[in-house]
Amino acid sequence: MEIILKEDVANLGYKDEIITVKDGYGRNFLIPQGKAVIASSAAKKVLAENQKQRMHKLAKIKQDAQDLAAKLEGITLVIGAKTSSTGTIFGSVSNIQIAEGLAKKGFEIDRKLIILKEPVKEVGSFSAQVRIHKDISVEIPFEVISDN
Image (tube, rainbow, N blue to C red):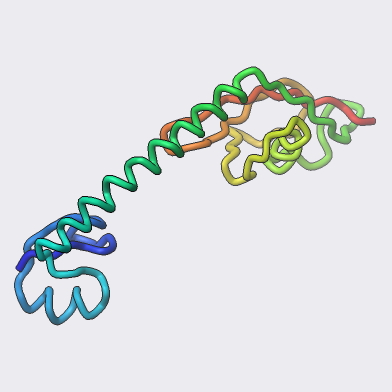
């Protein structure tokens, strides 16, 4: 029996794949659970059209991410933090402060997309990675200065 998977199924296949399974497995488990549909000619045409439309959307999203990455290339941030007399920060600079610094410059970036290689606990120059898209990331240099 040929079926089209509607979601990823472990050890079987990924969403929108056309696969062959035994009749009982398809009729008694995959189709009633909503994990698959029978691969009729009409269902295959719908799948092809959906994939074509999805490709256009993904291409637009990727292009928007590339444009944002180009704008972020020249940005440098200065982040103020309360420090001791030796230059050690009380606490640490996290992706939240970097996201706030980018917001002040006009870039709304979710803090979960900002990755620091190591915790920033002292004054100095560092860099953070911003993952805009699964294929596109940008290094943002930032400097931590004393606010005292």
